[in-house]
Length: 596
Image (cartoon, one colour):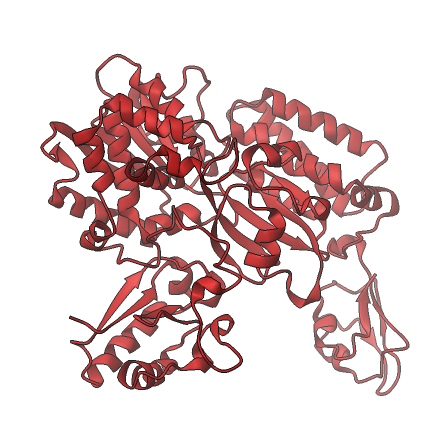
């Protein structure tokens, strides 16, 4: 029996920061000190604090080491694992008290308001070992469902729990399942949408990397409930770690008998495969996703009929996303009343967010529905860095909207976000500070949707392109009076006439930024200025006479030689030659150059 377990994050974020080298150094040092029989190294999924990777936790102490480098390993092994002395200078500093003692991780600002249900096993278990999942109640919910409950009871439990889809609009999961179950007996399918394509979103990836069996178990439960015997996970090909762990998990589940024939001797059969995504954002739309699995170009189909009636290969199909499925086993195991006790009246349970942008604690968070945006940004997220002020938060990715500072106290749930012109979406939450240009933000998201449109319907294919052209003109100082009204009309036309949700929601970032930051649009159009100093075509770089000491540093780094001036004399920038690269501002130690 090992006396210490060292959990090392091996999710994409930490791997990109060098976690593999840390693990290699750790195992080597453990061998060198003869600790192989006493210390077990476990490569886990994401702990949540992605910006502080590579991360490792030493148990039983629960010591949280952050930003670990291979050269730190010898010290940690020699001091902590060999002598029992925590290396406080390498520990996550929020856990270190003034007296040098290390406190519990759950008491830190990042973790204390979180409630990990979907992410319960991420960073806790080895995702490539089914036995560790089983040790944490894994597959008990499936056993309970197929041996103690009827399919109807499973559906009623999910329906009564109030679980709503975590992939977008928030439709009742139990209701969706009941539609498929009501179809005549025959071939039916269960599908998982793991084609996470929103910029800044990595929730589904992290669940598959850290707890793939939760999704497999949930899909088997859904299959039992609706009468399906075949399932597919449609996962992004750009997620190699998630794909590898999902592949391992499916094979292990089949070997353990929780996938395949006669599961738990109940007579229930269910087989599961995965398919790699086609690399298109539109394949996140359910009908386009199903079309792609069928081997065709991923284009959306008109609805109705909905997939629950006529889906994959023309058969009734249940389709939910990764996060939705990951919540199901806990609902079956602990009951609908437990799940209903979390969240708000209309939005039950928890929600996972990928917190990014201008925020101190970039990472993955899970909070009860109804938690305010202020709590997420200021307490969990640690606030805006560099003393900057909060300006807006984008929820729902390219399909969502921007939430301004005046709505910082809005509770995060389906209805509240909709009322202020945003949406939950899959869970990306991008924070912007005072230096963000909201016209440029809208242009960024439109540029993404234009590129990702499948081109099947004219309103999306042409309409979003025209919308992007208008935004491009605004950021170049070429907007004209009346353009805002034309843009609004075009937005509403695209929403009303596009075939699928990609086009129907594409104008949302434009409409929400226009609703809350109209003065920025007017400044771009009427004054030919970008108040945030972001849109390069509307800027000039100017040297402040009272601050410039003539050190010549700016002149030396200018790539186009547009700065003139002698030593100890004020320098001048030739705005005609200036390419506005910003090199001079970065080099100036006296803040003597500004964007104007």
